[in-house]
Image (cartoon, rainbow, N blue to C red; front, side):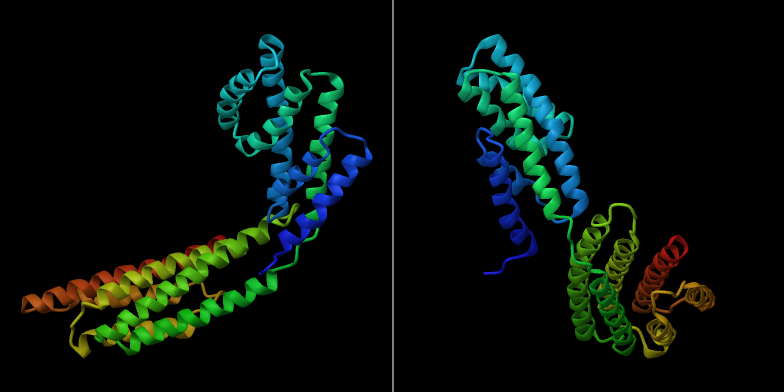
Length: 316
C-alpha cells in the first residue's frame, strides 16, 4: 500500500484539529477533523480557494437554514426544505464544494433545536480550525521543478527519436504503425506531466510560472499532429525519390529539435519544399496522384507542427 504526501499531511492535521476543538470546548469537535480531511488538497492555491469557499458556503447555509428553522421549526422535513434551497443556490454561486461540509454543520442546529449566537460562533470556530489546519498542512510542498526539467528532456529525446525513425522508415507501413503507438504512449506521458506542471504552478502563491504547463501543452499538440502524420504515411506507397526531400526535412528537424529553437529555419525549408512540389509535373496515374495528395497533406500537418513550436517560442 502506497501512502502519498497528502495522506501523511491529512493523518497529522486532522487529529490536531480535533485536539484544538476539544481544547476550546467546542460542541461536535469531531467536525473540525472532518473539515480538515475534506479541505487538504494537492496544491496550495486549491487549498486556499477551498478554504475561502467553505466560509462563504457556511454563511449562505446559515442564512438559509436560519430562515427555514425559525419560520417552520426544527423538523427533518424542514431540513429537506433547507437542502432544496441551499443546493441550487450553492451551484449557482459556484460554492458546491461546501455543500456537504456546511450541511453537516447545519445539522447541529437541528439536533440542538435552536439557532443561537453561541451555536453560530461554535460552527464558525469549527470551520476555522478545520480549514486552518488544512492550510498549515499544505504550507510545505516539495519542489518538483527538477523533475519537470527531467521530463522535458525525456520528451525531447523521445520526439527526436520518433522523427528520426519516421525519416528512416518512410514507406514501411508496419514500422510507421509502431511509431504511431510510440507517439500515443509518449502523449499519455505528456498528459500526466502536464498535470504535474499545473500542480507546480498552483503551489506558488505570489508568482505565476505557467511556463512548464504551456511547454507540455505545446508538445502535446505536436504529438497529436505527429500521430496524424503517421496515419497518413501508413497508407503512402510513393517511390523513394518522391519522399527523399521529406526524409531530409524530418532528419533536419530531429537534429535541431530543442526547447530554445524558434522553428523559423525549418519553416523556411518547408516553404521552399512546398514550392518545389507545386512546380513538379502532374502525376500520370491515379496511384501517383493519391500519393502526391497524401504528401501534400503531410507537409501541411508538418508545417502546423513547426508553427506550434514557433508560436510557443514567441509567447514565452
